[in-house]
Image 1: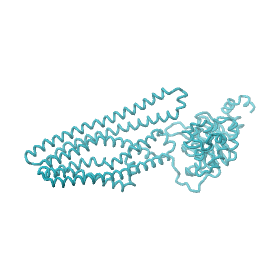
Image 2: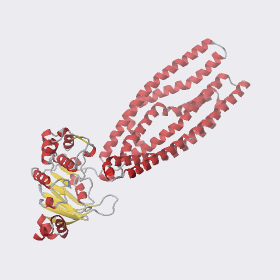
Image 3: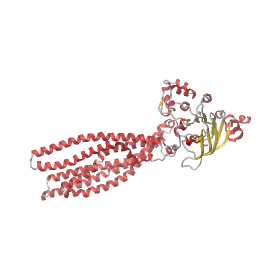
Length: 576
């Protein structure tokens, strides 16, 4: 929480002005009961109209001045809180952008979204309240008690009993409520997760007639949030009657003992009225403490959740010895005894992988599900770092390149194509900064999607639904490939990215790729695709079973023979 509040430092001047204005407003509020008592003693009791007019006019003038100060305080408080919220969102986004895949796996998307929205809004609103009224409440209590002692110390002794009791009670409520609000925020994460999964998977839900099941999931998440919120608010609100009870007892005591002192002649009506006014102000502010505790408890939970993200240790960072002129020019790839296991997993998904690709060569990677194909791809752009061994690009360790140098040279098409909201042109151009329209069109032609785009009503300006929902699987794959091609990469990685393409379209795509000066790695389950590569890498359960041309692997690997036989028949295998 302390780190989250450190983002207020750039706004120290504005915050100081807001606090100064609030203190001026506080001073006026504490003076008004004192002036009221003087007006009663000197004007009302003595029936002196001049005194009543003088002190009454002064009080009205101070009230108007306090109103103006309050408006100015609101202006500066709003400026600080909204600027602070903007900076906090900006820095939080930058932090998450620096996350490795390991870091991202620690937090569901819904939990990060909640931190960006609900949690930051809660902290931002509390900053506003803190500058506007939250800091004022305890100062009114302290100031009211001090002024009461100045007016009449014997009557003010009643505060020495009631106020400490209430403060101890409020500290207890605050600590307990903080833990309860942490549970509330986690339930908000859970509800967001269910909503996100439901909206993204709506077509699958309808296809499998799982509406009732999803409704039950939502009802459960919604009930968990409602129950935790209800119990938390009930607990905090239950403190309000306790506060009122103690303060009302204090008021009764002040009136009782004040009457006794007036009767004995040791005080006057003005002093008693003044003490009662201070008691009312203290009671009003203490009654607000339940609301303030509600806000602070929730803010602490939100601030801790935001701070948790900032404190995450990003495990993959740029190496210290990278140089600006270091770049990948050729696209040579070399794996040397590479092994890898995911964080918090005991089993290695890749073991002792070694191979070399010369610039411009094409490698087809084939293997069963879970054999480590995608994991191998994720190591080259350093989405994960190897557990042991080394990966080289152009005879240099990939650790010697910065993320920018390394990833700008790689065109990566993931297994599940992801499109962003916007136009088709925007999605292809997303692959490269300062791209021209001609480059986008050429990449689309090479990806075999140009004719399809031209057949759409708005062509390249066609809006893409969320995650490409209004496009077919093959269209999304080809747009994703065009996005990678527009980079003109030195290393092109296609993770089963042609699975939804027919053989003719795939063949045209692979022919078009020959015009690119890049090394190509393609994960595929199609033997027809693998056979056209210079090399085939056969993986099984994280181990490299074979490496060579189609003919070489077919002659030496029984597993590859079975795969070929399943697609082409035993007669094809027997030829070899």
